[in-house]
Image (cartoon, rainbow, N blue to C red; front, side, top):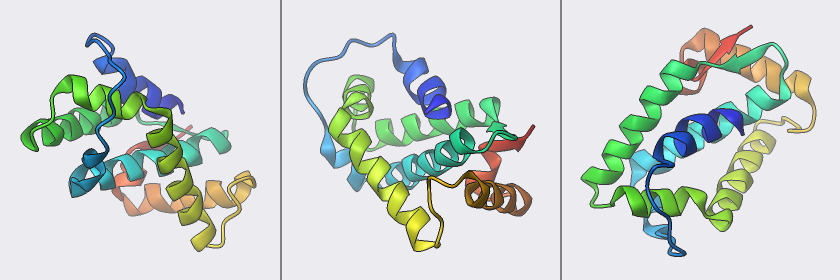
Length: 134
């Protein structure tokens, strides 16, 4: 989870955390889709040795999502609590794995994820922009 950890979690570490999770953040379509894109990119990157995170693009994308969360009325603290919540992380992991399976891709077989990653990069999709070939 390096891309997500470095970009999403790393930049908001300066804010304090409490034990409250804001599940309604999934209801913000831009945030929901953005986290999903990051999750897919992470799944590809961690299973494909020649595909890496496009760190600067990832940082910019995460800050854009943070702005959408703020615009939707969430504080940085609430957003941090949400993304640090293990149950919310598991929801995202499950969604990403279901997506891979819906494409006929076994998430445990890196070759198929590498092919998806190459396709996303070539198509310059949002997921592809979060990745780069090594």
